[in-house]
Image (cartoon, rainbow, N blue to C red; front, side, top):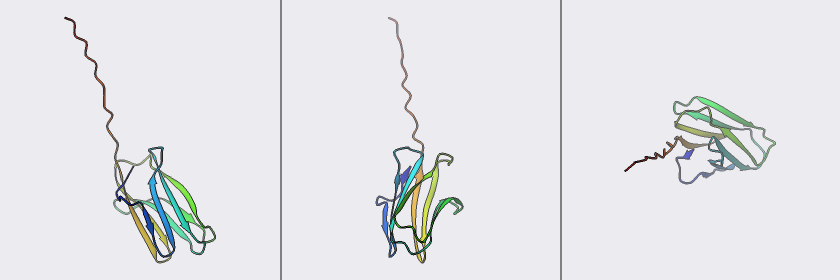
Length: 110
C-alpha cells in the first residue's frame, strides 16, 4: 500500500484524519480525531468512484480508528473519502505488488 500523498494527515474545520499503511501489507489504517457532533462517512473507492467499503461514524462518537482490508483488491489506484457535513477530504492510495526476487543457484563442475 502506497499513500499517493507524502503528507497523509489532513486537517479540516471539523476533524483531523491520518491514513497510512498498517504493518500487515493488506490493511490500511485510518485515524480520525474529532469532537462528537456530526455523522461521518469514511469510504474506500476505486478509480471510477465506486464505493468498495465504508465506515459510518455516529455523531456521538469522538476520535476513532479502524482498518480497511485491501486483500481482495487488485493493484491500482484507489481513494479514501472522508465526509463530515460540508467537509470532504480525499486521500489517494496506490496498491502495487512488489515482485519477489528469485534467487537462482547454478552448479558448475570443472
